[in-house]
Image 1 (cartoon, one colour):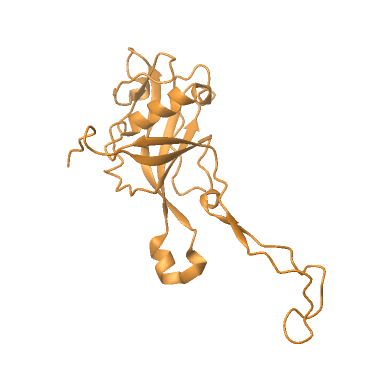
Image 2 (tube, rainbow, N blue to C red):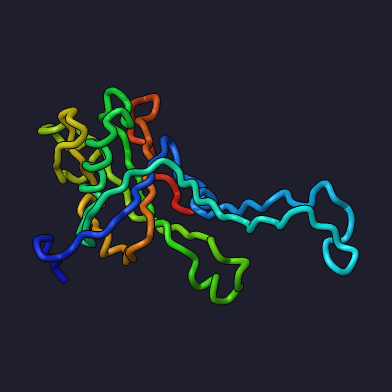
Length: 203
């Protein structure tokens, strides 16, 4: 169904980015840190002979996420729009010159099925699904590397975002609010050709 952006409230999305590869899936899992209470005491900690000089503080869970942009968007957001937002907000993320850079996108989502079947051991695990990729081409010129010719300006560098996946939307990928999007920025190869897409299963 068509989404009316004038009447539909946008949602919050974390767009992660990394040079040359995707992030490891473990980078998105919350890290548990426990207290060192009792590490220097070998006596009993319970029963009538227990010795407690202080109460153990509760364990804490931290979630230090990798570098990302926080944006508000809609289910109709395309990979072209995500690329434009990323290159406009972080123009130095692209090499100079940027022509021939490939931006690969994948969906990061929690392993809800694993959590249901495996119990607490599967909580905090994430899975990945390929969304597609686009290529940075010269603005107003011919398509680069025989890719599609979807055009937009990004990063203020006179570039356009092109590729057969440029118009793919979050809705088509069955994005659920709370999922993440991870972007791998792949500079051109040494011979100037476009790098192949990254396998979404890596990391």
